[in-house]
Image (cartoon, rainbow, N blue to C red; front, side, top):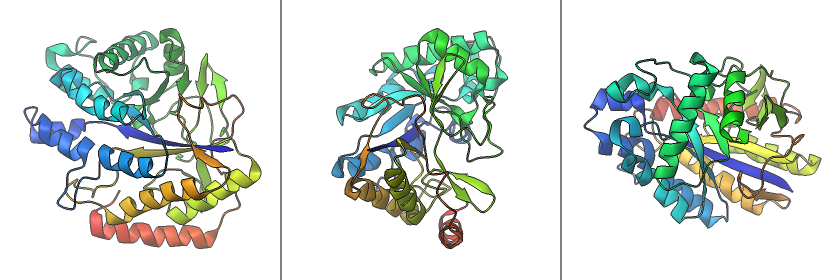
Amino acid sequence: MTAVYITIDTEYSAGLAIRLGLHAREAVYARSIAGHTADGAVGIEHQMEVMDAHGIKGVFFVDPMPALVWGTKSIAEVVEPILARGHDVQLHLHPEWMEIAGDANPLNGRTGRNLHDFTEDEQVELLELAREYLMQAGAPAPTAFRAGNYGADDATLRALHRVGIRYDSSHVPGIAGSDCRIGLTSADREVVRREGTIEAPVGSIRSFRGQRHAQITALSHWEMAAALRFCVREGVAMFNIVSHSFELMSRDRRRANAIVRGRFARFCETVAATPGAHGATFTSRPPQIGDGTGAAGMPHSEIRSAARVAEQLASNALYGAS
């Protein structure tokens, strides 16, 4: 069986909070988490409804750092509906929130965009604080982590080991210029133990110029469905896919992106309809050392890639570049 991890980075937008003002938490929630649009909500509740309809449990990597500004009740509003539906809550962390935290900045004014901007000891402090906020919001103790912007390094893996978080999923071999600084390469696409932490890379497929990461906005349904069939046929243990709480919205976060919304729904339907595939989480089926995490071994199809490029051009024209 191929375990399909639909992982959703679930986060208030720090940039939107700055633009709208720190008084506008509810508006930031509506446009970052709930996905409110004139076409209906397409945020986490919608994503869970789609997954629930097909018997899939998602992994929601929740960023609790906005608690520095708005308190843990703002995080509980995110965590509670996820737990109520039986999905998996794990830890995410965007350090950008420290730039607007004022006196609540835990590092006495130190700021940075990515975790790798901080020392190992500083990262331990941030991870411990974020975990505390997440648990105060009602979540179980997290066992898995993904860095905001994928911005982890080897010090992050050591820090995770020190605080007792077993799994990381920040290495993204399908993005050549990502913010990830973990000492792995694009050829490292299997689950490995590194610096005491089990690293589960984001999945990928072959594309025109090497690899393309498995993200709902980055691949077409045709590509994802072909990749899933390849994984099942070749006995690949897992297909690790990324999405975001706001990913089914237009770029300005005012409208539903009908193309991406449909892609997400069709892929969930495909997972449910594919013999040998099943939805999984870091709790229900933890990654194992040596597991493949995607379909990078699948031969490249120029036709599928070209069709995806055309679909992305249409999506960008209608809904803004993603």
